[in-house]
Amino acid sequence: MTQIDAKTEALVPEWLSLPDIAERLDVEVTRVRQLVKEGQLVAVRRGENNALYVPAAFLDGDRVVRGLSGLLTLLRDDGFDEVEILQWMFTPDPTLPGTPAQAMSENRGTEVKRRAQALAV
Image (cartoon, rainbow, N blue to C red):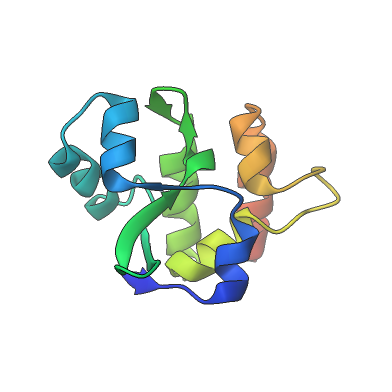
């Protein structure tokens, strides 16, 4: 997992530890680790303990935001690493409006995916 810089960390308004995510999803922490390993969530190392954290915006109540896994796959296929994904997802895009992460949580994933596909061109 990647350690993030202060600039990228500041882009993300709220972080959740893997145990916090496990509790919200009502699964074991090992399942959350598997979601990260499978690429369905992005986790980075941060904080004093260098623990893994995931942006809270990637969860919608007790589930992963709809369409997030496909978007993450698309971005990785475009050559993005975890830090670049977070920077793209949490940087405001005036054409959306808001950030791609915000648009995903508002069920505007189609528009976000269009913008991600345009990155590859």
